[in-house]
Image (cartoon, rainbow, N blue to C red):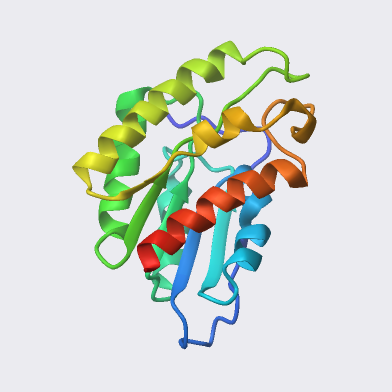
Length: 198
């Protein structure tokens, strides 16, 4: 059964939406994507246009695939970078994989897909890993590895990057980052996109 969160939100942005002189890239994700999207846009401004949609809605929410597919259909995207594993903690691995695989299969009909790992989650204060999310993040990153092979898509190892971000570059909530932390994530995202565009 679908479980709602206390707060549900959507953020999106399209750069130079009327232009077609450069490749166009879509970032799909949650608050982590929202945190690094502006940096990715700046890093890639001479190469491509970067749009994004970030939301708290989980993959098992009826609105989720409508939002993401609607955004993806609104422009011709050469690449879609997908990073959405930090919501819907109640979803079992089977449900998560089924929902994500079905969505990515449809998105991959017109765009090259980069599938990113979910980032590390600490308890508040950043001293110990959150035990509930540690289990879910590990499960979801195992699913990412499976889908990279099954769907033949590119892989952005953001979990490994997030592990290397120092505590001084993390927000106290254990999930988010300051500008230095987001810069490290954005660097990996931008490099994965450049690799596909080239």
